[in-house]
Length: 106
Length: 137
Image 1 (cartoon, each protein chain N blue to C red):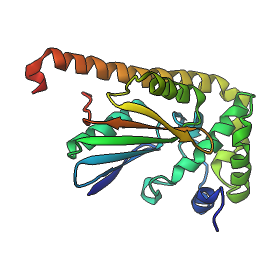
Image 2 (cartoon, rainbow over the protein chains, first blue to last red):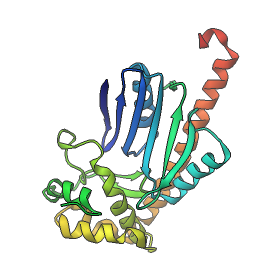
Image 3 (cartoon, each protein chain N blue to C red):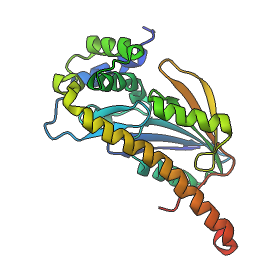
Image 4 (cartoon, each protein chain N blue to C red):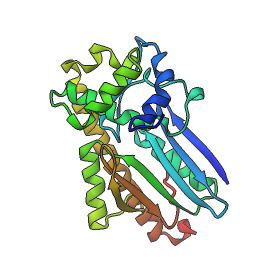
């Protein structure tokens, strides 16, 4: 089991990788695409083979609509399957599942 | 103590002692859809993973005030936060001024464009790898 939290300025993403190479990724806050790329790539480099990202409540309606559209139409994001989980206290929650952990060329 | 705002109770002591930085950077937080100033979270070494998610509703509400269209579902979070950590720099009146509207519009558009562009870039890379078996191996 290993874990790390990636910080980029005020943005933060937490990663937990179990002994079978499954990564659980939690988004605290995010202010640019670079931290997302760095988090996914570091997860890959750390040996994760599969993984799931949990968004938490997506309060930003345009962002929530984009996630919901991909979930409804089966459109992947960064190669992962987007699934609507539930209505959170302030917005919908989604998960993105990767059967194969991606790597993004920076 | 356990209630709907437990996470706010937990983080309140840290936020209430933050001081405003006149050089704070403003950015757009993707999940909340809110403008955030860089002095509104504790220093990295003092942060607990996951603790800042509870600020999403507060950032969203403030930005809805900036845009003149209050997000009422987030108002209870804003009001509870004002009660729990009134000295937080995020409550500075100038940070909810309409003068930030153009910044919000610009940064929101960039965030959404960047989110889509990242996936497009990834798909291009994946297609290129599929076309180049040597690179994929």
